[in-house]
Length: 306
Image (cartoon, rainbow, N blue to C red; front, side, top):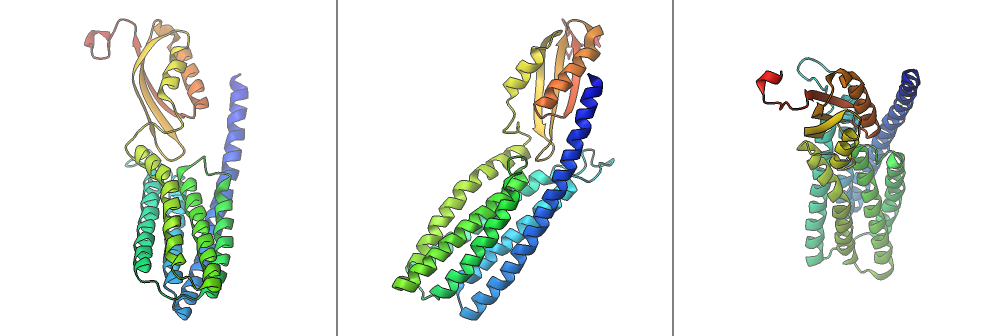
């Protein structure tokens, strides 16, 4: 049994390292694609004197920044632990996902302000140019979002990158439609209206990211773990009488930790019980476990039981 488990672990590790390299290249490819697009869009906006294109280029620049941040956090979580940072820099991934949610919402705030300004005084815009640049934007943003699609539920940072890109693909679709409408009707006011609609969609999709990363920053229980389920699982193990002081928190956007006090009837069975608890918790995605065992009839505060 033990041998089989080791074999499984080795396999898991191999898959994990393969995933890491594919994600790493996804981040790098995303950064290159989007940087090129930002340069192109700035140039077009400058040349055609389009505020819409310039502000969209600024927004896409915030994407590149968030991708670089996510890549940095991704690399940092792989760094080794040391005396000062006993968990390594794993928590940086949580801070970055929080920062990403904040960047996204700030960008939305800017889009809303600009749209309101344009609603009050509509400005003529080059519909054709806007439509073409936006069409390229749709392709680049959608392609980048697709790079992160399969891993987005495994890690908040990947989810953040995915949301950023998907939101941007939407922004570009909006700009493309407004460009086409402007070409055919000269109805400039459509530009800010679509801007506001897109802002609403981004707020809606980012809220969850903000909520989850705030929760992890405050050492809350990660969303995919149910504490009741964990305590039921542990208390169903033979030899465990009860448990208390249960704490579950996230070390990084992908790794979870737990500490608890376990009351057992027979101290001789402690090692077997400990092994069983660790094994079951691994299946619940909790890999860093610290357990304190107590004998039945003793409380953790009483000296004579120590």
